[in-house]
Length: 247
Image (cartoon, rainbow, N blue to C red; front, side, top):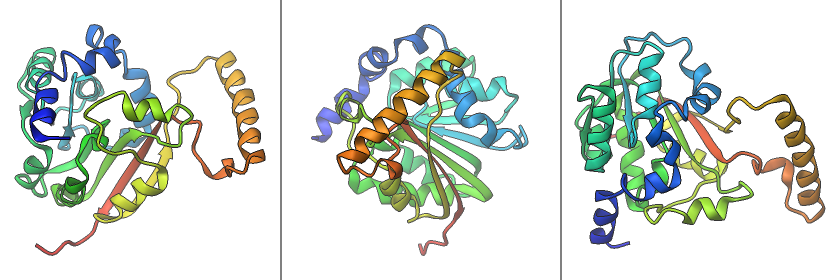
């Protein structure tokens, strides 16, 4: 993708791609909160609410609003889209988000954060910038800090749509490739599949039946379904213990 095209897409990202993909959250900032509860709630449950939390690529501001609702009072963000920055700051009634490049921002704030979130961000980063991102992310964390990375899962059954629905998507990840990337900056990396947000009893039962059927089908055609996270739309990585990196 040319830089001019990328910049043009990002300049209107919040008005075009973001709203068409997730219209509900632009109407109701709490629309994604059940997903955050299911997938991030336990990760932050025992963290002191005064720690420094950064979100890179905050978009519509829903995650920062969720963190604030849970009592976190030292939140901040950076996003490359000026319209999304303006929207988030307006919705949160405070200038917590700045416009800028995530890698540059992280480099400017070494050892400044205890938790860094990147939801639906890393897949947008050009491949040549992934190593600088991981290293900058590692350096931006304080001792004992963690990065929480959430990306579309390319082993998901609808992964092709997820990969190509957005023209700013540069990469796709499986559990293995995401682990390999983050291991370049962290000694402890755990990648799991995302969970459904508050499923009903009937949904859980139907999901269990369907997943068993699909798993069996993939096994029969030789796809090794037991090792593939085909049932999760997203991958969630928790990266800790930053590796010492020479300057």
